[in-house]
Image 1: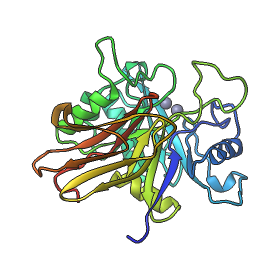
Image 2: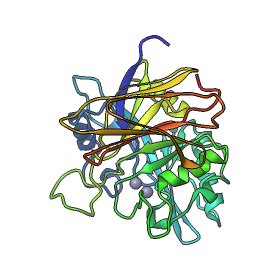
Image 3: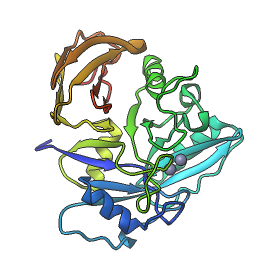
Image 4: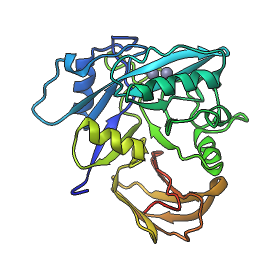
Length: 305
Ligand SMILES: [Zn+2]
Ligand SMILES: [Zn+2]
């Protein structure tokens, strides 16, 4: 492709079309004002055509239609974001979690959308065991700041990152998304609310269009973040290089992680390079800052160049 740019966006946003506390227009304004380039509106089982949202800013900002398919099975919530489906997926729950996930994935794909498996650790709903038994999907939420999403695991349960390594180590090619799941965009802020601006993805694309953003999501040409911004992320047959934007006096640690979650290399500072051996089933870069921020680059497979 020709020139490539980085575009920050959020794949999971609620508005007052379901149980969010602001209008779709307010949500669009909020994200635009806070440095985002694109936003997917994903109300529970509702589909809002973006052309119906009266937001026409002077600087570029892209709204993408979506829906959070919200079902339950085996007494647990089973949610997926459908990004850019042609219409409301209207997916129906099935007897088991695996069947219900598959139904949501299939409906989304049939409608030309991209399925994202949401917050598996929310209410400890399901695990990599379930996700490994669902086909035709590639994206899941590694980070969702809403209460009880339990991103970091603990108490004997795996973190979402550990679940990712298990899936990758089993040969699955799945990509990690950080997303806000924002519900509270105005009013008083305190803990235990689902606030905006805490988790996002930055995609690499030639232009800010729905087609280009969706293509980058599908192929994993993006990174997920809770704070850290990258200058660049480059993969060649020989190496993987991460360059991090310095913010204040923050210190950065990058780990290159491979099979079974093993740390292959650790680097400090704003630039980290990993020399590929060529026989690694996967390698991924994970960065964190002394301020508590995280970023996750998508895995590199042996045929990734
Ligand atoms: Zn949800
Ligand atoms: Zn949600």
